[in-house]
Length: 119
Image 1 (cartoon, rainbow, N blue to C red):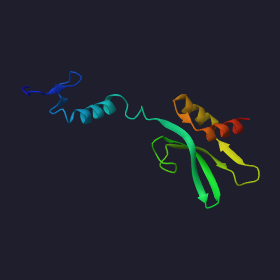
Image 2 (cartoon, helix red, strand yellow; image 1 turned 45 degrees about the vertical axis):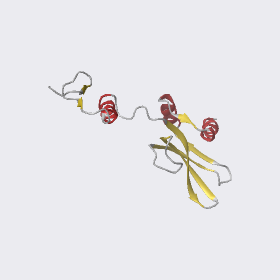
Image 3 (cartoon, rainbow, N blue to C red; image 1 turned 120 degrees about the horizontal axis):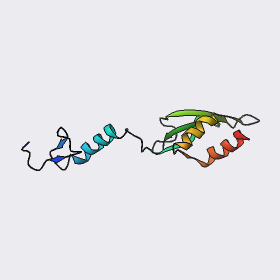
Image 4 (tube, rainbow, N blue to C red; image 1 turned 60 degrees about the vertical axis):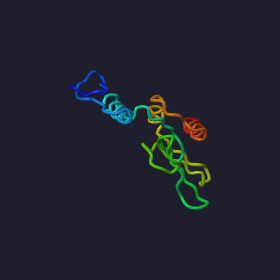
């Protein structure tokens, strides 16, 4: 094509990078397009706090590990209410297993809640 110093990716003539500074940007776009987007995202099953002051209520959620505790989540798997006399634990264990099979890590507190809920 006559571009000096151009880098051709995947032997495809339409994907040409004109500078080495843009190479990482183009490569990340190519990875997202060809290899399924955010499949390498590290997910964790953790508690997200709700309720009011001195009356906590926790949701068991799946989220990206880089997000803050009460930030955006991917899926809500259940809830935990420690303020009632018998603690209320409601979990969808099938979805928990599906997420752990896909590689999601489980926090220590959620692991103990899963043990209580499955017993």
